[in-house]
Image 1 (cartoon, rainbow, N blue to C red):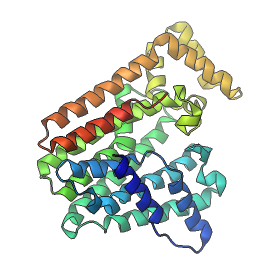
Image 2 (cartoon, rainbow, N blue to C red):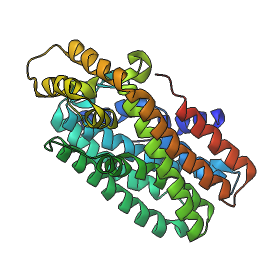
Image 3 (spheres, rainbow, N blue to C red):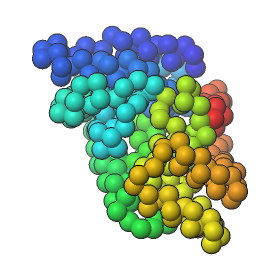
Image 4 (cartoon, rainbow, N blue to C red):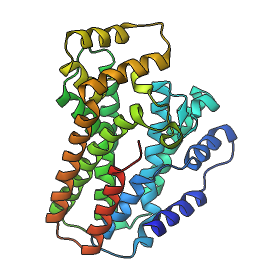
Length: 321
């Protein structure tokens, strides 16, 4: 897998974008140069590897999902007013909102260019599935924004939101690899489901890392979800399980408009610790990964390809706090 990741990084570095005006294209090169896990293009390669071994044939089309993903990050960061991405200033902070919007729009177009590098016979299915996925990601982001205006959000509502916002792209990435490998319709549905289940688990881990992560390793503002009153799985469960005094304390911080960020984060984390929220979230995360593993075991695929995908998922489950 290290070789696959190295090959992906080389292809990303070699991607050609325009040069004029520079403040349209420089942000694209900037956000792609910040690294990241390259999770989505890796899933394309691993999905392909479930049936075939010659991964080098699909390196270029695999980059479509990485370009699209970074486009969504660029726009999401504007909406969330996020100052940091992968340990560096976000595009709208380094340039401005207008530049980030236009550069993101350009990345969306470039994602389609990258899809066109795949074999002609796979294009109709790939584009159709990609379009469906892209719309669902937007639906998920809108639901996430809508949650800011809602007084309460249920656990089921939250899981559906993260399924759309995060997990469907992981599902498509794995499925896209299967499309490129010539999987049957039934197999494609199965690998898409595997990717979605793992994607929900992945986002639940992200929720944990936002609160408990090491800033140097996490690459984003730790505690940002608490500061912004973001309705994550952790907060939803805390509000559900809190006793009277804990609920009053949470409500006080949720209503506060003038506060010290560090003080608020520590106060809310203390309530999470009292309620065992870390353990509850981890248990929920593991349940989704277990479903993905079970479905993968049942899939008719190369033994080596399955082993690579299992190892990849297990690594995601053990990301450092």
